[in-house]
Length: 288
Image 1 (tube, rainbow, N blue to C red):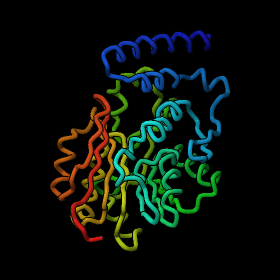
Image 2: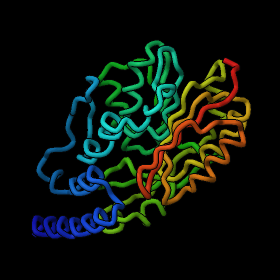
Image 3: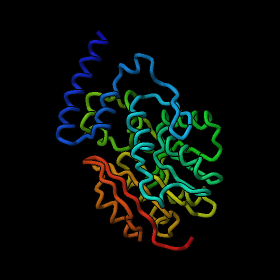
Image 4: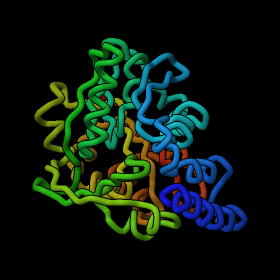
């Protein structure tokens, strides 16, 4: 009966994905990713497993969507490296905000050499696998903090996908409940997580108060993170920002206006369909 139900659910999901693909809400890669993100793959014992990335890192992954979405976005689409000034360089300090299991952090760690990656991941499941990936690869220049970033310090509800692609876990519940495919197929748990502002993190943890690049992928909390970084943006403590904008929650125009208010120039914007875009912004100062 369990197998029959799994097959039935998969066929229902196939019908939904087909409609969305025909209407151009999903591209081929994303549609395949959603179809493969189905419980039978876990029940067959294929996940969790260790995979090898194109640049040679070993990665523990607990869901096939990590391959079809996250690895694809990092190594095939190269969504965070479409502008040459945003490819990590030797000696850089990088913030990976919304780090998931460390795919971007590990990739950047090799490029920056004696630099450092400070990563932020409030999802306790992702945080666990991130730490395991650091140990698996003997990486010494990545630090991971199990906290969220926002516009004020405190404790906040965090919604975790317990079955499915946990990468989409978020503090914005509507990001899960209003999604095209999420309602029927996700199991979500709520936990309390600590939240800090980017301003206080830079003040307390970055000795020279300078971050070469901040990559932000926070599933609908982009504006909140930036609102908690007003002082750092004003004082040009962050040289570059590459931000994944979740357009079901965030208005891209509003986000760009906030950055321009602090004299950041939008040097590139990737429109990746109705649900997502990537904004590359650089400060206009020449202080460093």
